[in-house]
Image (spheres, one colour):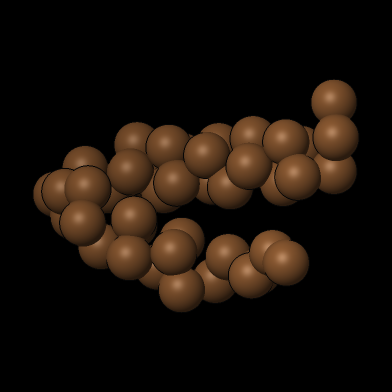
Length: 42
Protein backbone atom coordinates (compact mmCIF):
# COMPACT_ATOMS: atom_id res chain seq x y z
CA UNK A 1 0.00 0.00 0.00
CA UNK A 2 1.46 3.33 -1.02
CA UNK A 3 1.50 6.44 1.17
CA UNK A 4 -1.23 8.00 -0.98
CA UNK A 5 -3.47 4.95 -0.63
CA UNK A 6 -2.96 4.97 3.14
CA UNK A 7 -3.83 8.67 3.28
CA UNK A 8 -6.98 8.01 1.24
CA UNK A 9 -8.03 5.17 3.52
CA UNK A 10 -7.51 7.26 6.65
CA UNK A 11 -9.46 10.12 5.15
CA UNK A 12 -12.32 7.82 4.14
CA UNK A 13 -12.47 6.40 7.67
CA UNK A 14 -12.51 9.85 9.23
CA UNK A 15 -15.39 10.98 7.01
CA UNK A 16 -17.31 7.76 7.64
CA UNK A 17 -16.97 7.98 11.42
CA UNK A 18 -17.82 11.69 11.45
CA UNK A 19 -21.00 10.88 9.56
CA UNK A 20 -21.82 8.01 11.94
CA UNK A 21 -21.40 10.34 14.91
CA UNK A 22 -23.83 12.91 13.49
CA UNK A 23 -25.83 11.60 10.50
CA UNK A 24 -27.99 14.73 10.47
CA UNK A 25 -25.15 16.55 8.74
CA UNK A 26 -25.70 14.56 5.58
CA UNK A 27 -22.80 13.90 3.28
CA UNK A 28 -21.97 17.33 1.90
CA UNK A 29 -20.50 18.90 5.03
CA UNK A 30 -18.05 16.05 5.82
CA UNK A 31 -17.12 15.73 2.14
CA UNK A 32 -16.43 19.47 1.84
CA UNK A 33 -14.37 19.47 5.02
CA UNK A 34 -12.37 16.46 3.84
CA UNK A 35 -11.78 18.02 0.44
CA UNK A 36 -10.54 21.23 2.07
CA UNK A 37 -8.21 19.38 4.44
CA UNK A 38 -6.76 17.01 1.87
CA UNK A 39 -3.16 17.78 0.93
CA UNK A 40 -2.59 18.52 -2.72
CA UNK A 41 -0.56 15.97 -4.62
CA UNK A 42 1.90 16.77 -7.35
